[in-house]
Length: 284
Length: 284
Image (cartoon, rainbow over all chains, first blue to last red; front, top):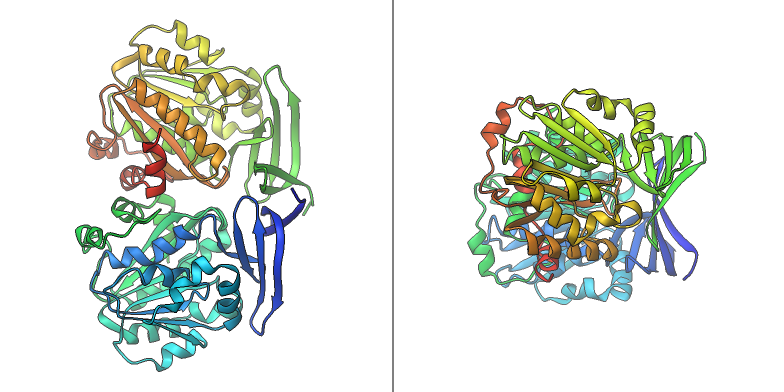
C-alpha cells in the first residue's frame, strides 16, 4: 500500500485522511481546482478546491436522499431542474422514473461533467438519457431567465457556500427558484451540517432564508461519512407539500426501485431531529 | 495553535485527526493504555489503546442514547447494571431519574474511573450519588455471579471487541446477562457500525448472537462524529418489550428531563434503517 494520503481539513483543528492508490487527475479550471483519486477504502473520488464532492464508497447515500424523497411526496413530478450535480449521480437516480419527462442539468463547469464521464462512468450514465438536457451555465443566471412555474422539482446539488457555489446560497437565487417552480413544486437543497460550528452557521443562515420565502420549509438528515462529521442535511421547501403529511409511501413503492439507503422508514426517520438541532433551527 | 495531532486509524486507509492543545496524561495500566488530551475543536477527550472513548464535543449524544431510550420503553426501571462506562457519563444520565433505586457500575480498570474523576469531573459527578455502587471487577465474572432476575436494565458501555472488552462480545457473557435480567428486563449494548467493513462484521456477529438469545432484538442508530464514520449503533434486547410498540413517550416526557440529543422523535427515527443496513442485519 502507498503512503500517499488525501487530507481534508474538516475544521482548522480536525482532519480526515484517505490513503491514495493513485492521483488520477489534477486541473485548474476557470472556476475551481479539480482532482480525481483512486483510494483503497473509499473507492474513486473527486474534490473541488480540495473538498470531497463524491466518493464511490457512499455517493449513493447522497444521491438516494436528494432524489427519492421528493418523489415519494409528489410521484407526479414531470419536469426537474438540477443545479450543480455535474458528476451525474443525481440525474442517474432521476432517470429511473419513467414518469419524469424532462431533466435540465445546469452545471457551471463543463470540466466537472467531462472528467466525471471519463473517471466515474457509473455516475454519468444517466446523462445520455434523451430526457436530459445539459446546460453549461451559471445556475444563478439560469434561474433568472427560466420560465415561471415550469419546474415541479428543483434540486440544488451544490458545493459549500464558497467559490463558484456561493451564489447558490443567496436570497435572490431562491426567489428566482420560487418563481420558476410550479404550484406544487418542491425544492431540495444541500443544507450543510449541525455539528461543527462553521457548517452549523451556514445551515442556520440558509434555513432563515428559506423560511422567509416558502410556506413549507423542513430539513432532513442522513449519514454521509465522507463529509465533515458525517452528519449531513438536505433542505425540503415547497409551496404546497409537507414532506411527512403528504408522504405517499405506497405510490413510491409502486415505482419498484431498488435503493441502498433510502426507503419509506428512512423517509420518516430523516425528519426526526435531535434536540440541539431543533434549537439551532428555531433560533434563526 | 499547536501542530500536535492525535490521529486515529479508523481503518488501515482512513484516518481521523484532532489538533491537540495538551497531552494531559499517558499511562499503561494492567489492562490498557490510557491517554487524556485537551483539544481545540473536540474539547477534552480520552483514548484507550489509542481509540477514542469519550470527548466533550459529543459524549452527550452517546450517553443520551444509551440511557434515555430504554427508560422511555420501561419507565418503571428500578435496578440498573452498567458494564464498563468507568468515565461516568452513563451513570450521570441514570441518576437523573428519581425512580431508579440502584445502579451497579462494573468497571475492570480502576484507573479509568480515577482519571475520569480527575480530568472529566462533569462526567463523573453522578458517581457520588448514594444509589451508585462501583465494582472494580471484570464484567464477565460479575454477570456469572450476580443474582438471577435482579436487573431491569443492563447497559453494556464497552469498547470494541479487542483487548479487555473482548469478553463482552461473547455468547456466554450474554447468556449470563439474560439470566440476571428481570422478566421485563432490557439490555442495551454498544453495537459497532455498518459503514466500514471491519465494524460491520462485528455488528453482524453481535446481532447474530443476540437473536439466538432474546425474543426481542433490535438495533438503533445515531450520529457520533468522533467515532469511525460517525454512523454508530446501540443494540436493544429484551425478554418482553418492543422498543417501538412499547414506547411510552408521554411517560418519558413526564420525567421532565432536558436532553440535547434524545427526544421522542429521535427515539422513533433511530429505528428507521437504511436498506443496506437492513440487509446486513438480515444476513446474519
